[in-house]
Image (cartoon, rainbow, N blue to C red; front, side):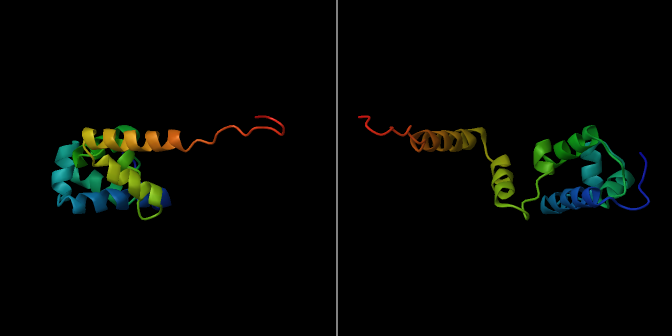
Length: 121
């Protein structure tokens, strides 16, 4: 894969996210490279924002980290929504179903009722 001479800001941000999750999961770069089917050098270039990589490679890295692909592109330090989504990505299917039920039950009970016009009922 090609390398950038100057790291792209988004590539650096994604690389830092990959490294952060890898370290949080107590994985070495060699362990993640093996799990993702990548070379250690290529993964290192990705983590430093210098490698050009595609969605297939991102998917392999996410799988190697035990994440859904969308979770890899979350930046929880930047928004509450992304913090919540990251937390939900780690939930069991049963826990997600409970959250879904609570959210949609609450949403349907708080929907505004149509306003009645003047002189009506």
